[in-house]
Length: 440
Image (cartoon, rainbow, N blue to C red; front, top):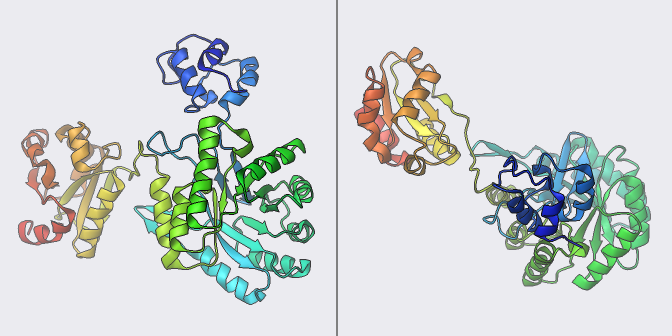
C-alpha cells in the first residue's frame, strides 16, 4: 500500500537540508507521495528507509528497456498525465513492421532504408528506433530467416511478435546478448510467453480486450516472478484506443493501480492514429511500413512533446560561421534557443550571405522572452563578444542586434565602445534584405 506524505516524512532524515530542491523534508515527502519526485533526490535517506519507501518512490509506470548492442529504447517511468504538470521522460519507441513472409532481399532493402533515415530538426538528429518482426507465416524457419535478414543490415532493437511462443523462441536464438520485446501473451498462452521472456531477458507484450482482463493477466505474470511488461489493450477504433490508453495512464498515475502500471503498445493504421499514439500515451508504436513523409512529422511531434517544457531545446553558445565569413563581415547576435538560432542561420545561409553568428547564453529562451526575463541584455552580449574572442576574427567591428531589443543599443555602445552597434529587423525572414541594403 502506498504511504501518505506524513508517513513518508517520518522515514526521511528530517534535516531540512534543502539539497533535494525543497525547503523542508515535509514538502519533499508530500511531493514523493504525489509521485512528482524520485526518492534518489534525497541524498541522506537511509537504506532501511529506502526499503520501506520502495513502493512510494517507484514511478507509477514501470520503466522497461529494449536493448541491442549500443542501441537502447527506454519507455515508461512516467509520473504525470500532462507534460505541463512536470514533463514526460521517455519518448515512445517507433518501430517499423517486418513480416516473415516477405522475401529476404525485400526485407533487407526496406530495413536498410529505414535504418539509414535521419533528419536534422533544430540541431537534433531524428531517427526511428527499431523493427518489429512479425510471425505471419507460421513457420519457425522463415521467422528466423527474417530476423537474420534484418540483422544483416541493422543493429537496432527488435520486437518479435506472434502468438506461438515456440516460433518466437527459434527467432530469439539469433539475438544472443540482446533484450528484445516479445509478444503477445494472452489469456491462452501467457504461461509459455512469460517463461520465454524470463529465459530470454526480454520484455513481454500482454494483450487483452478489456482492462479487467489486462490487469488479471499482469497479476498472473507477476506471480511467476516477471514484471517487464507492455500492455496491448487491443483497441477496436481510434476512440477506443484513446479511451483505453487514457484510462490505463490515469489509473496508474492517479490511483497507483499497479496492475496497469506499465507502458502500452500501439499498432496504428493511419497517420491520425499514429499521432494520437504519440500524444496519448503509447510506449511503443509499431508502424506497418516505412514512409519518410509519414515518419518525419511523427518524429517531430514526438520530439516536441517529449522535450521538457522547463528546459527548451538549446544550442551551445559560441561564435558560428555562416557561408565562410571574412573579417569584414557583420556579427549577428541572437540567443541560444534552438528555433531562434536556426531561423536566423537558415535565412542567412539560404541567401548565400556570409556572416558571423554570435549565440549568447539565454538559458534556452527566445529573444523577447530572454530580454523580459533579464537573460539577454547588453552586459551578457558584451561578455559573449569577449568570451568568444570575436574581436580577433573581425577587422570591422559591427554587431547587429535583433530588432525586438533595439532598446539595448545604447547600453551596448557603453559596454562595447569600440564597436559599431546596428539594429536589425524584428523577424529573421527580413535579415537577407537588411544585410544587402544596410550593411554594405
